[in-house]
Image 1 (cartoon, rainbow, N blue to C red):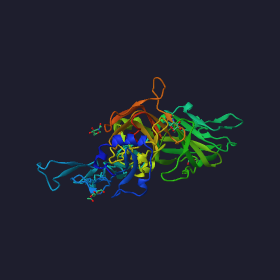
Image 2 (image 1 turned 90 degrees about the vertical axis):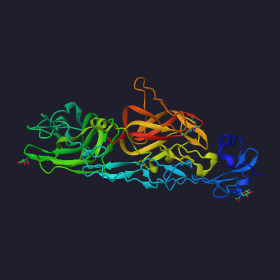
Image 3 (image 1 turned 45 degrees about the vertical axis):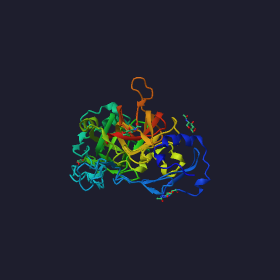
Image 4 (image 1 turned 90 degrees about the horizontal axis):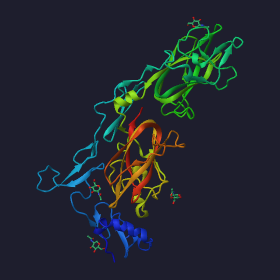
Length: 477
Ligand SMILES: *[C@@H]1O[C@H](CO)[C@@H](O)[C@H](O)[C@H]1NC(C)=O
Ligand SMILES: *[C@@H]1O[C@H](CO)[C@@H](O)[C@H](O)[C@H]1NC(C)=O
Ligand SMILES: *[C@@H]1O[C@H](CO)[C@@H](O)[C@H](O)[C@H]1NC(C)=O
Ligand SMILES: *[C@@H]1O[C@H](CO)[C@@H](O)[C@H](O)[C@H]1NC(C)=O
C-alpha cells in the first residue's frame, strides 16, 4: 500500500502541487506510520499517505538509513558537505569535505572563530564575537567600527556656526519692564554682557530650549553654564534631553539599558561649566534641553559636542552587514505578518528568524502564510542606524525554487508610523528589483540612505511563493 519513498525527495515539486489539489484526509496519519521522526502526510495522489523523512533516513516509512559520507550532514553551523572522489588524496576525512560559513573553521566547521582575539576595538571599546564578524561597543565620545574615531567637535553655540534662527525655546523671560530679552539665541557658552543667556518665562511650567542642527548629527556631549542676573546667580541644576529627526516625534534620552529618562546633573553657580557626555551618543537633527530643577530661574548658556555623520560614514564605507547573517540581530528582533508551514506541518515552518542570508537547511528562509502584497518581514535594530542597502536571496522549498522578484522597503523609528522608501524624482514608492533564482545574492542600495530603528521589507512580486533571506547594510552612525 505504500509506494512512495526515496523518490519523494525528487518529486516534491509535483507533490507540492498535488497537495494543493487534494484535501487532507487524515485517517492514515492519526497513527504516525513513519519511523525515526518522519512526518506523515495524507492526500497525495493515489497513495493513502506518504512519509517525509528526517535527515539521513529514507524508505517508504523512513525505516532505512541513508548511506553516504554526507548523510547525515557531518558539518556543523550550516556548513555544507561535499563528497569527494575516492581517488583524491586526502587526510583523515577523505570521503567528504565541509565548506564552512564565514566565522567557522575546523574539519567539521565546529569551531566558532573568535573574531575578538586580535582585540579590534580601540579606546576601551568592548568587543563582541559574532558569526564571522565582531562588533565594538564604544565608550563615548569614540565612534566607528573599531571606536577609532573621536567625535568631539564643538558644534557652534559659542563659535556662532549655529545661527540664531536655529535656536528656539518654549518661552522667553523679559526683564526690567520688558526691556531685557533673555532669548534662546543668547544661550551661548561664555556669552558676555548684562543680558547674556536664555531664561524661560516665570509662568512656563514645562520649559525647553531646542537647537535644530539642520541635518542629522551625532552628539556625544553638552557643556552647560548658568548666568547672573541683577547680581543673582541663576542656573539649571538638572535637566533631561530629548531628540528628534523631524521636529515632530521626540524621544527622551535614556542611558543604555535603562527604562527611565536620564536626568543630567548640571550647574552649581553662575559661571563654571559642567560637561555631560551622552553615552551612547545621540543621533538626531533636533536636540531639546528640558530643565528639571532650576535655581531662581531656568537660565542657560551652552555648547553642543559631537560630529557630522557622513565624515565617518564615508571613511568607514557605511556598508557593513548589520547582523542578519552574523546574528548580531537576534531572533527576537525579527517578526513578520505571518508564516508559512509546508504541508501545514509545524516542523516545516518558514519563520522570520530564518530569513538570514545564506541560511541552510530544509526550511531556511521566511515565507508568509499567504503570498500577497500585504505581507511583510520586520527587523528591529533596537537603536537608530543609518541604512544604506539590502541584500536579498531566495530559497528552495523541497526542490521548488522560490524568491521575491520585486519588493518595497518601509522604515520607522517607533514601529508604528511607517514611511515607504520613495523614488527621489517621482515620489512614488520605490520598487526594488529582487531575485531571479533560489540562491544568488541581489544587492540594492538605498539612495539616499535613511535613518531608522525598524525596517520592513514588503514583497511586491514573487516566483512561486514569497520566500526571502536577506541582510541589511549600513552603520551605527
Ligand atoms: C522497511 O519497511 C518496509 C515496509 O514496511 C519493509 O519491507 C522493509 O523490510 C523495512 N526495512 C528495514 C531495514 O527494516
Ligand atoms: C558669579 O561667578 C563669579 C565667578 O565664580 C563670582 O565671582 C560671582 O560672585 C558670581 N556671581 C553671583 C551673582 O553669584
Ligand atoms: C491578502 O490576503 C489576506 C487574507 O487572504 C486578505 O485579507 C488581504 O486583503 C489580502 N491583501 C491583498 C492586498 O490582496
Ligand atoms: C539553486 O541554487 C543552487 C546554488 O546556487 C544551484 O546550484 C541550483 O542550480 C539552483 N537551482 C535551480 C533549480 O535553479
